Image (cartoon, rainbow, N blue to C red; front, side, top):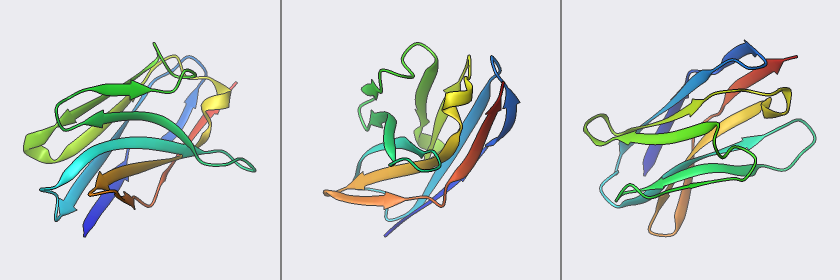
Length: 115
């Protein structure tokens, strides 16, 4: 089992920045990749960014050039640096870990961007 705990959400004005953190614990040795998804009210959960254990990254087109995902192996933590935030980035952001084809999810952290 893998446990994920997110932090760093909040309220920010358009154009501002936030950094989300996701700390993993439990049986983390076989994690293949970690990432972030988000879900806005009335919409389906969507992919935001991911990073593999070898450091390769992938981003949704909507956040490319504005968001950066990174990992700190010593702390078993993944970060999502979000710059140039837009009102449409408002959502609950969920941390995700993939281990042997099984998905684990955090509880989510709210990000609200005001115009």
